[in-house]
Length: 197
Image 1 (cartoon, rainbow, N blue to C red):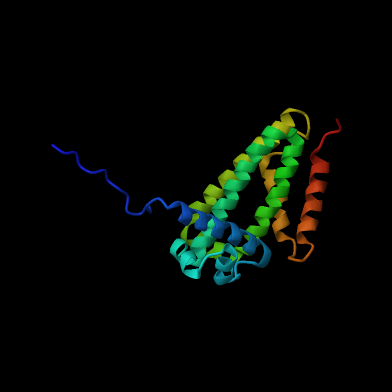
Image 2: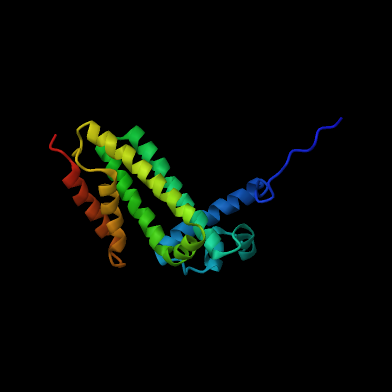
C-alpha cells in the first residue's frame, strides 16, 4: 500500500530558485540602505532599479511596502544578533560592546527610515516587535555581562540601562550630522562604562 504524500503548509512558500533568492536578498539589502538614507518613502521603483531588477520582480517578492519593511526590519535584527556573537569571539569584551553599540546606530538609522510603516505593522503584528525586543536584549546582555565579569566595565549597569541609553539616540533630531553625533554619544557612554584598568 502506497504511503500518503507528505502534508504541506499552504502558507509556506516553496523554496526559491538560486537566481530568485539572489534577487530577493539584493532587494532587501538595497531597501535597508535606502530606508536608512532617505526614509521609507523611498520609491519602490528606485529600490528595484538600484537592485538591478524590474518592479514586477520586487512585487513578486514583496506585495506591499509593509511586507518589504517587515523583512528589512527582521534582517537588521538578525544582523545585530549575529554581530554580537562575531564581535565577542574576535575582540576584547569592552571593544566588542562598543563596536556592537556603533552597529546599533545603523539599526536605529534604518528603523527611523521605516517609522511610518513600522507603526502600521505594530498594529497588525505586535509579536514581531516583542520578538525583536527579545533579540536585542539577549545580544546586549551577553556583551554587557562578559565585559562586566572580566572587569572591563562597571558592574552596576544592567541591560535595561544600556538599552535605554541606546534607544535615546532615536530621539535625536534628524540632520546631516545625526550619525556623527550618535557615534560621539556612544563614545561618551563607553567612557562612562569603562573601569580604570
